[in-house]
Amino acid sequence: MNVVDPSVVCGERVEIGHFTVIEANVKIGNDVKIGHRVTIHEGTVIGDGVTIADGAVLGKPPKPAKTSTVKLSGELPPLVIGDHCMIGANAVIYRGATIGAYTLIADLASVRENVQIGQYVIVGRGVCIENHVQIGDRTKIQSNSYITAYTTLEDHVFIAPCVTTTNDNYMGRTEERFAKIKGATVKRGARVGGGAILLPGVTVAEETFVAAGALVTKDTEPRTVVKGFPARFSKMVDERELL
Image (tube, rainbow, N blue to C red; front, side, top):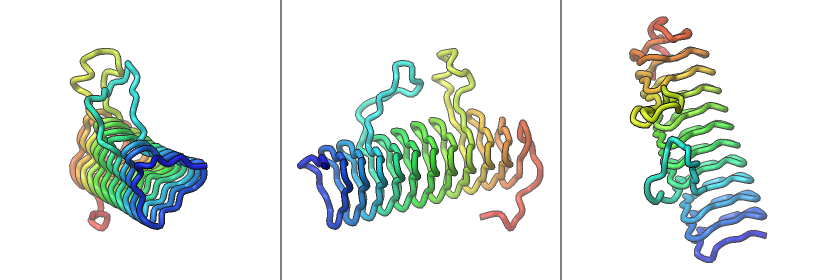
């Protein structure tokens, strides 16, 4: 049995699985496929040709703890999912996010509120994207990476599996951290290898190659390879590897 609010606007050729809940004022485009046990919260907008796998939760209203660093300010706009996106099984996308066309949010991924994701983006299995993150077009974030709040990933960025970004040098022990919280900025075409760690506020320059396992503690120069713990200049990126 499905529960679909009478106010839902549904396009043509929409398929809905079993035990799905669709709340008030949801808008669903044409040729959308919705799996079993999906929950779509109030006001969510879903474009044409979107596929939503079993157990996904879309438009979830955030409820931060009293001790959460990132607070809510004002009413959030509805979740908007662009045309031809694919949403994986048990993925959770919060209200206040915008997902560009042809983007994949894979199984078990989480996308928080106040996040903008561009077109043709891949967010891999188990990836966690926190609040106030900006992600450009054609960027790829591989499985189990953690994208912390206030991070920017520009176009054509590659984030390998298990990369960790950070935004707080004070580790929650002083109120000063609220004024200085800042995630990494990864510029166009940069690549970050598996298991690398980006410290708060660093800028990974255009077309930088961060080697696997590196600890990036300071800004990099464009088109350089950096590696080590902490990361240091190794060589220039091969011209054949540039965009």
